[in-house]
Image 1 (cartoon, rainbow, N blue to C red):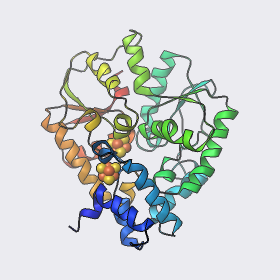
Image 2: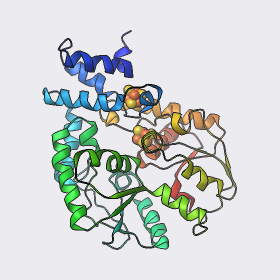
Image 3: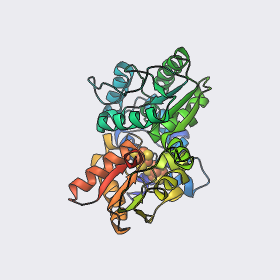
Length: 329
Ligand code: SF4
Ligand code: SF4
C-alpha cells in the first residue's frame, strides 16, 4: 500500500486530494510526484490524460511553494544559459546558420554525445536544404513545463518563438523526441506557433524509401527501443523500423514492450534529477529486455535513452552496444 502513491493511480488521487483540499502538500509528497518520467504508459493503458494531470499537479505544487531544488537549478540554467545542464555547454553543428528548414540540435546531444551532432550534420548536408540556428540556439524548455514551472516555460517559450520568427523558420527537424514532442504538442497550446515539426527519423526514413540514403552494413542482431515520447506522444513507430529493415545485415527482433507499449528508459520528466537510483533501475530493466531479445545492438532515436541505456550496459558490463538511428548511416 505504501507504494501506491508512486503509481499513476496514486498520483491521480493525490491530484484530486490537493484540488479538494483533503491532502496537504509536503516535501515527501513532492518527491512522490517527481517519481514520474512522463513516459505516458499509464495514459496508453487508461482513458485519462494522466500525463497532463501530473504536469498540472506539479504546477500546483510549484504554485504552493513546493519545488525540487534540482529542478529549480535546471530551470535557472535554461533561463540564463539556454540549456538545463551547464554554463559551459557550447552547441556546434556543421550546417549553414540560416534557412527556412533548420535542424534543432537540442541540449541532450550536446551534453552526452556532442560528436553525434557532427554525424547528423554530415547526413543533413548530404540531404541538403537544412540549416541550423547557430550557437545561440535556445533550449525547447521541456523541463520547465514537465517540472511544473509553467510561468517560466511561458516566458522562455516566448523567447524561443521570437527567435524562430526572427530567423524566419518554417520547419524544424529535431533528433530529440523531447524537443519534438514539446514543439509539436505543447507550443501550439501556449504560443502563436506555426512551424512544421519533424523528427530526424521521419526524414531519414523518407530518404531511405526514396533511395537517396542507404544505411551502412551492420551484420548484427538488433532491437529497437521506441523512445516513449516518439512512440506514444508523437506516434513515430514505423519509420525507425523501415530504416532498420533497409539496413544490410541487420536482423531485427522486437523487445517484449515495443511500439505503443514501449517501456521507458527512465530518463524523462526530470525524474533522474530527483530519483537517480530508481531511474537507473528502470534503465536496467529495459536493457534486460534487449538482452532477452538476443540483440547485439540496441538502437534508439533519443539522446537521453541512449545515455540511460548505454550507461546501464556499462554498469552491467554487458556486451550490447547502444546506438542512435543516425549511427546506421
Ligand atoms: S512514469 Fe509513466 S506510467 Fe508512471 S505515472 Fe509517470 S507517465 Fe504514468
Ligand atoms: S528519455 Fe527516452 S524513453 Fe525516457 S522518457 Fe524520454 S523519450 Fe522516453
